[in-house]
Amino acid sequence: MLGWLDERFITHASAVRNPPFGIIGALSHALDMAEGQPAGHCVRCCWIGIHIGREIGLSDAELSELYYTLLVKDVGCSSNAARICQIYMMDDITFKRDLMTVNGSLTQVLRFVLSHTGMNAGLAERFRALVHVFQNGREIAQELMETRCDRGAENRAEDAFLRKCHRCHPKLR
Image (cartoon, rainbow, N blue to C red; front, side, top):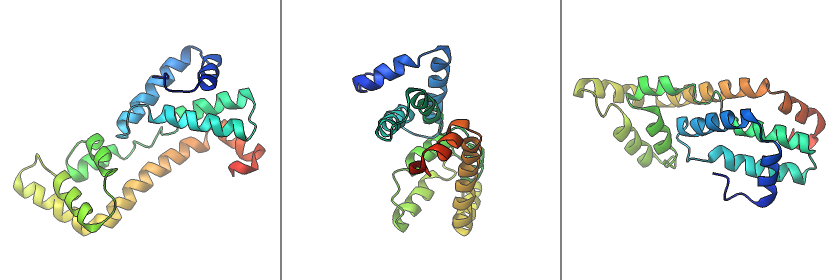
């Protein structure tokens, strides 16, 4: 999984290797899957973050903390999964993955909603779900985004490393 990373990053990853790394790495991979992200999304974020951290002069200890913080950056962000299943009557992983391809144009949004709402439901149930989504689309989108972002923000607010970064590194504010 780390084969594509540059030598300095691999060396850093080896320096911080310990038993929790495997567990956290597995959880990070599961988060990628839960959010419909391509495999290795969080690891790529780590790679980018470590490079930025080096550029702004973080110490090895801070780089290690940054690595683990970024590895689990999406914890809590899958908290809207059950609501997506309820509203759209489909699995949230496929929904989230496919939603990333929608550019926001009305045509694409309509096509997406029609092809992702209640596809396995009866006709009447699907019709009710579609009417609900079309009537309340803006509010539904806002609710799903707030649920995802609020929970993720709560987790990040509890992260000691991020609090320390905000105090010590003005560039990160």
